[in-house]
Amino acid sequence: MADELIIFGALASIVFLELTQISPGGIIVPGYIALLLDDPMRVASTIALSLVTWGVVRSLSEVVILFGRRRFAVFIIVSFLLRYLTGLLAATESLPMTTAVVIGYLVPGILAHEIDRQGAVKTLSSMLLVAVALKLVFLAIVASGQSLGVPWPR
View: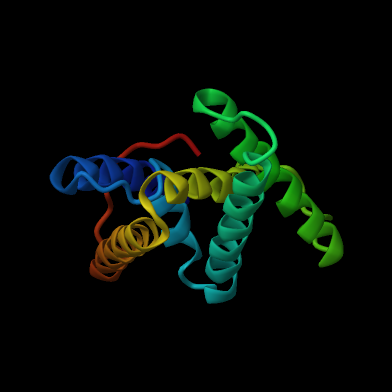
């Protein structure tokens, strides 16, 4: 179900962006957050890490010229480093490097980049709206016993 949630999250993000002209935090972020909605502390820590990443990059941009792809790359690198350091401090780094773990390292940087572009309130509220809607749709599908009919390789 995680794969489907990420894929449909990307589709929902694109549709939401086209309808509202507001990015819900990037393409993969709402699907990833929808996966985490069962664990509010992880959602909160992802959002907090995004805000810290945003602050660090804003501070760096006072000293270093950052724009375009370079700025986005710095968001990703800073979020990766901060996530790694918080993992070391929390002693949770024994997890294997799976795709979901790697996405979890990248999401705060992507979210911080969108916060920088359009503001925290627009980005976070739209991200949570799309993530909750996705989760509700998937819970309804699971509760009805229906399959999505998508033959994803397992």
